[in-house]
Image 1 (cartoon, rainbow, N blue to C red):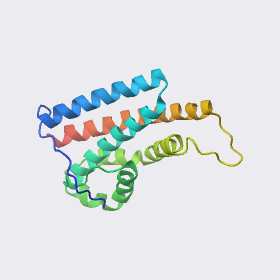
Image 2 (image 1 turned 90 degrees about the vertical axis):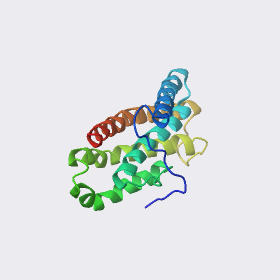
Image 3 (image 1 turned 45 degrees about the horizontal axis):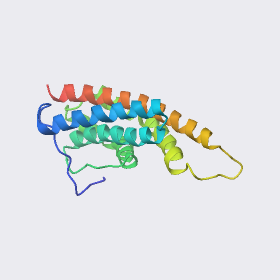
Length: 172
């Protein structure tokens, strides 16, 4: 399991300083993502979506495993843990602390996460690369990046909804 030397700041209540900072960061990130779409800067939108989606998944994994050091993950590492988690789900769900329906929601978005990751990689990491036999123009590449933002935006809404359900359940 991926472990970082950094520890995730825990939000104890929504009104503490960590909670307020996270709310501010999320609000600004979401506004900036929408602005990147309107202003035609999809690469910025992709980078912010990658960060915000990964943060929600990381928060979920941190709570499930009760390990704050499981932090500062990349999307790839978080996705790998979710995939591996299929094997350990019985232990976590057996404790009764996490409803099966919410956890299945996270497992259910693995293919969506992979689709976003692939679109992100193509747009960010392969933007300047020319594949033999595939000659995409600058504008075609920007169009692909815009599609990646749309994929990421829809995914973020799903991930955020799952995390809100999870948080409501764990705060009871």
